Amino acid sequence: MKGRKIHSLVDTLGLPIRLVVHSAGVQDRDGASLLFDKITIRFPWLKCVFADTGYNAQQTYEAAGANGLRLEVVRRDPNAVGFEVIKRRWVVERTFSWLGRNRRLAKDFENLASTLLAFVTLAAIQFGIRRLARP
Image 1: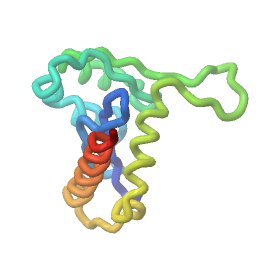
Image 2 (image 1 turned 30 degrees about the horizontal axis):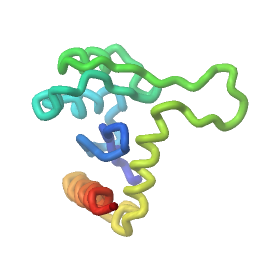
Image 3 (image 1 turned 90 degrees about the vertical axis):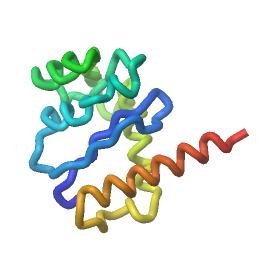
């Protein structure tokens, strides 16, 4: 994308719980505090959050701890050769794949981050409704 990052907190099925869009100049570890902000008010049962190695920083652990969450960074096996499916991480990657199937989100057409967030939210609602409609 052109200068934007989307941080997504998803459940175990890959359905988004919280989305944050900001400029690409903000590091992942700083974006995590925006993601964790006020999350325990809406989802008080949430206790553990899995993240990839981009979020492996002291400030990310502090942001999670300040919101009553335990952060576990999912790492790749150091002995692995070639491609390897990383436990827990594929769930978020699948969510981004679902978002990419939406025509409006296939490329970065939006000028404002708030507009992009609105279309990502609409796409998430769409595949959430489709999942509910399945028999």
